[in-house]
Image (cartoon, rainbow, N blue to C red; front, side, top):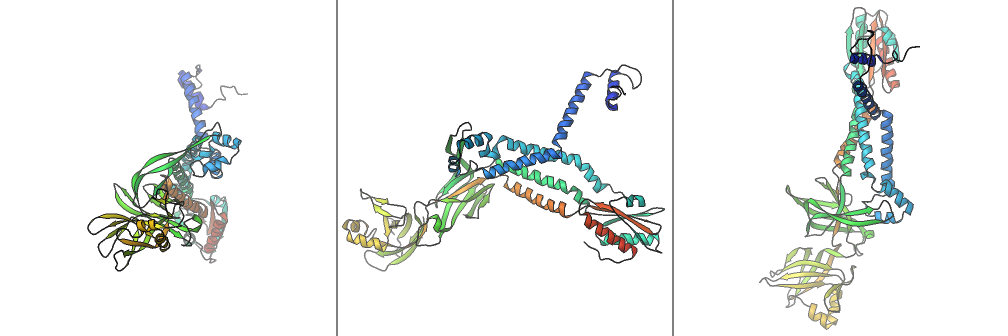
Length: 532
C-alpha cells in the first residue's frame, strides 16, 4: 500500500520540497510552509467558487428561479398599478402578510431578483470563457490532412470507387462535388494520397455565444427598466406642465396595513396641451367610456432641444428621451366641448352670422367684434344667489361662456344658449333681462363637439426598453442561426483510385449524411443534383 506522502499530487509535493530547500528524492525533510498551504487553500476555494459559478446546471437553476419570479410578477398584481388597492383589499390576511414579507408585490425591485440577474449574468460570462477556446479551435484550427483510417472512423462514413480513374482526376471530382453542395474546400496533395477538407457553417460553433450576448443584453435592459418609474399627468388645452404624479403604495410587510400617497416628480421637458378629441359611437349620447371609440390628445413638448408636436391616443403612445406617454384616463364626470358652433344675431337688428369657435380659440364678426371661447357648462343653472353654476356633468342644458371684445376695445362677458333655453328665458323676466341679449348680441348655441375637460396621460420612464428590444432581436436571430444551421466537416481521402469519405455535424446529422452519400455518388460517376 502506498504511503500518504507518495499519494499526494506531484505538483504539491514539488512545491513542498522547494519550500523546504531540498529536491525530490534527496532525503531532505519536507516541511510544508504555512504560507504556501494557506495560499493553496485559498486558491482551491476560489477555484471551487468559480467552478460553481460557471457550471451549466447552476445556470439552469438560476434561470428557472428567475422565470419563477417573473411568473409571480405576472400572477400577483404589482403595487405600482392604480388598481392595486382594490386587488390588495380582496386578499386574505395570510396572503397579505406572506406576499408582503416575500416582496411579491414589488418583485422586480426586490433584492433577490436583482441578485439572481447578477449571478445568472456571471454564470453566462464565466461559462462562455470556459468553453470558448474549444469552440474557437473549430473555427481557426483545421485538420487539412487525414488517412483512410481516420475518415472511416468518423460518425458518418462512406467509400466511393471509380474504376480506371487516376488519383488527380478523382480528387478533382471530389472537390467539385463538395463545392456543388456549398462546402468550402481545401485540397492538400501528399505523396501517397490527397486529402480534400470540406466544411460549411463553421460560424455555427460560435452561435451559442451570440445567444449569451442576447441574454446579457436582455438582463441589462431588465435591470435598467427596474430603475424606471410610472406616473400620470393631466393635460388640458392651453395649459403647460413639467410635472407628473406617481402613486406610492407602501405595504407594511409585518401587518396587513398599507398607505397610499402621491409623489410629484419633475420631467426634463414641458408638456403643453394643444387639443383633445373624443370619438363617440353615438354623438347624441354622453362621453362615457362605453360610447367612446378613441381618446386623442395632441400636445407640444418643449425642452432645450426645441419644440415638437405629438399625437397620443389609444394603441399609439409617444416615446421621447426614454419616456413613454400614452392615453390612460379622462375626466368623464364633467362634460365639455371641443368646439362650438354659434348663430350671432345683433340686438339692434341686422343679418345673423354663424361662427365656429375652438376651445381657447377666437373668431371675428363682420363688424370687427371678436369672440373668444372661455369655457363650457354642460348643465347651466343659477344657484340660490343667482350666480351661474354647474348643476351636473351631463349635457342637460349646455351653454358656452364667451368673452366679447368690441372694435373699440371694450370687453364684456356673454353666454350662448340653445334654442330651447332661449324659450325659457323669454318666459322668465329675470332671465330675459340678464341673458336675453348680452354685449349687444343674441348668441345661440347651434351645435358642439362633446369631449371631456382634460385627459390623463400615463408617463412611463423605462430606460431599458430599447435595450431589451435589441436583446430580444439578437436572441431570436441567433437562435434561428444556431438551431436551423449546423457545422459540417467532411474529409475525403483519395488513395489508390478510391475515395474514403468521413465526417460529422453538430446538428442535423441525417441531412449531413444525405449530402455525404450524394457527394460519394458524384465521385463514383453517378449523377445527383446538389442540395443547398
